[in-house]
Length: 78
Image 1 (spheres, rainbow, N blue to C red):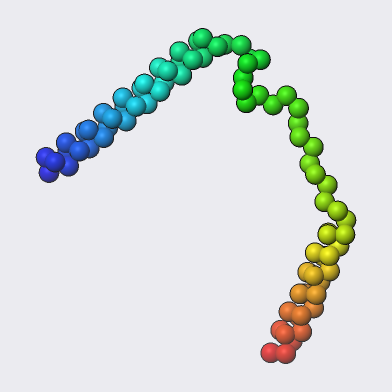
Image 2 (cartoon, one colour; image 1 turned 60 degrees about the vertical axis):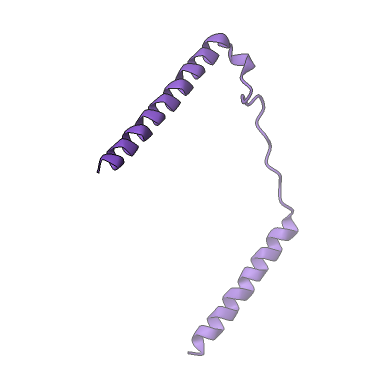
């Protein structure tokens, strides 16, 4: 039982030290670089979606229609 308690204590201390250090380092980084224009992941322009060709859409629709006819005929055969 002592080993389990010791292992749990060591795990909790390791997590506190890890996340505490990460929090301090993040605070230092934010304090040094506080301008919004230098954000590396800022989105400056929205991406336009790529349009799919109409022929592909019609083909998928026709395949789906074929499946529906096929499944309807197999169900009526029961």
